[in-house]
Amino acid sequence: MKEIFCVRFFQINKMAVRFFLPPFLIEVNMLIKITDKCNMNCTHCLDDAKPDNSHFMSYEDFMNSVSFFNKYGEGVFIISGGEPMEHPYFWTFLEYALDFVRTSLNVGCVVVTTNGMYMTNDIVYNKIKEYEDKYGFKFIFQVTSVEKYYPIKIDLTHKVFSLRSVCVCKEIESMYPMGRALDNNIQCPPHKCSKCFNIRSAVRSFKNLKLACQCLAFKAKFCAPAICYNGDIRLGESRLCPVASNIYKSHEEIVSDISNFTCKNPICREINKTLPINALEAIGEI
Ligand code: SF4
Ligand code: SF4
Image (cartoon, rainbow, N blue to C red):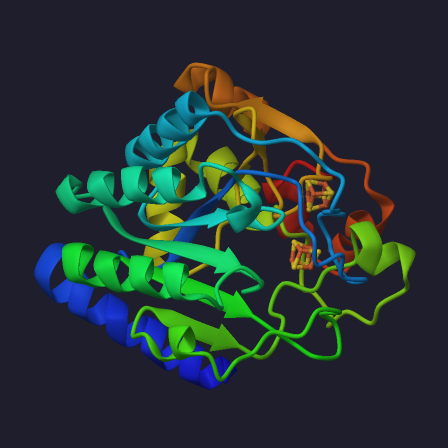
């Protein structure tokens, strides 16, 4: 299923690319995390998202996060959480993002990452179908559902999963030893470097966030600055990463914040220990 996701994702983007984008702008390079709430409560959650978490991004912060991505990011951004569909304004946000994407030359596609627990009903089916007709290949719902890790089972035979813009992922690509994955001692795949490495090294090198994102997109490197519910920028995927900057700061301040960012997370430091000296220099950790 992972292969299917990758192939379909690429095909969708190839079509988007053919009509709207230069061919290199196909890499995901920013996450907008609209809430820390999630009712799935997985043991491996690197975000420590829980049912009783209650931070929700405001509409204004969402609009400004999309503008921020349009200004500095490239290609594809993810609307994520926690579980993004827990947000009471989820559909309003998505529609805003899709209207934005439709007229933007810089943003190719919006990906919603979800556990799928709110998708198996006719309202959602009809809504996604309506968006497919209205927006075409401008969005994807990436549903991750892995029996071993997700305590609530999703009915994957539901017709919503046959829609062309809904993809089911049967593997977890972002398992990382943070949050409950760490607390519960979940086996994570080996990582070459910390989740924040790409964006930190690129920003330090270019002294420019836009160029850094363009370079990473061009090299098809996943780049994960995450914008959290209050506009804070974190450089790894998890909301548990320390805050590095904020979207409301000036470009100079953001570049300075990222260039001077250091993190004492012992697990990430251990992972980065295997990097060559020049790579450690690239993120200022030597
Ligand atoms: S891993 Fe995803 S689905 Fe599971 S608790 Fe965390 S946010 Fe929710
Ligand atoms: S915890 Fe720190 S070092 Fe680890 S990914 Fe997050 S920002 Fe990077």
